[in-house]
Image (tube, rainbow, N blue to C red; front, side, top):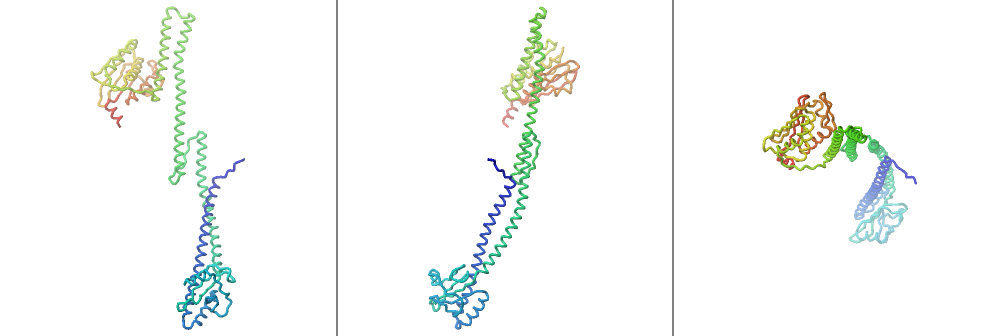
Amino acid sequence: MKNTRIKYFYQLIASHLSILLIAFLILSLLFVRYVEDFAYEEKAQELESYGQKILEELESPRPGAGLQSYMSILDAQNINFIVFDQQSRILYPSSGNFPPVVLTQEEWNVIEQGDTLVVNRDVERFEYTVTFVALPYVENGRLIGGVLLASPISGTSEMISELNKSLLTTILIALAVALLLSLLLSKLHVSRLQRMQKAAAMISEGNYAVNLPESQFDEFGDLAKDFNKMANKLQQSSEEIDRLENRRRQFMADVSHEMRTPLTTIAGVIEGLRNNMIAEDQREKGIRLVSDETKRLMRLVNENLDYEKIRSNQVTLVKEEIEAAELLEIIQEQLQLQAAEKGDVIEIETEPGQVIYGDMDRLIQVLTNIVKNSIQFTENGRIVLKAFEEPQYMVIEVQDTGSGIDVEEIDLIWRRFYKADLSRGSGQFGLGLSIVKQLIALHDGDVRVESETGKGTKFTIRLPHKGKVEEAAEE
């Protein structure tokens, strides 16, 4: 079975009109009923007022003349009256077309109790529908009968009929105006929904550059504000995904490039050894070359693992107070042979008792990476490791007398697998310096580079003292 869809625009109009119609009907019925009751009550009060005057006239010494004048006045207003006794016989007027009075026992009980009997609509006892009242007629403390005044309700009915016509006209005009306003308001609301629908369609197609007009007027404005926030978040997420994808592609390209050279070398040497293409006196050199390239691959894999762990916050630092001299001596001992191969000398300058607050293993990793890069770009020179104290930081400097780094390339050396192609030679930074920057950031410190081509390079690391780190943690 096919579902029947009704547009929201028509739903709004139908809801507005149905509410208005119900409200108008209820109000009209209540109003007509109120006016009808009010009209009958007014008529009854008028008849009762005339009845009181007739009773006063009956108590006068000469009631005949007065009653005759009242009869003329009331006839002009289409009101009839009679005076009757307890046997329902008409005492006055002696002649006329007024029918005999026939009251029920309950109605007689009202008169006998001295109260005024009021009947708003009577359709049975008279030739036409009337409103009548009956007042008790008492003389010398004894109930004689009563005075009955009756008036046809045709005038009242005509007034109520005219009122109904006017009310119906008013309702039709009000409905027409309400329909017009409903069309305008419905169109306004639907247009706002259509804008949101269009924006949602754009987002579903991957276009997050949407901006709905916001307002504080109603929930539509709040929804538009939240929608814009969502679109902005999606745009940021999309951009981040694109950046991550580009980085992934670049990473794969860099890793493939870095691995291709050592793997080609290893494959070539092994093939040469297997086919006896390498002379006996060169075999040892070939095996050493395979060993070095294997270590290079292992270093590359380990650095990648370290880099990703640091980026994903999987590295937990175990900070402690470290003797600066001890830390620098470890670096000197580990790399002095490598430095000696290039004719370099590693020197230490620090005052006794200087203390560095950080993770011992990670700081060794940081300094090892920096010193290795210094060795790479320095031949027959000096590499100085220096540690000294500032008011809020402990400073570690690694300065060499090597070929230096071009000023335009200083900010680029922190990139993964960045390679420097200098006029004095070529070199590569791999992941080492990227890891250095990440690890120093985890220590809440910073690292800077100063360099000039042909005059060497200086790395400056600032690590906060233990007290400052603890204060920052408390805040």
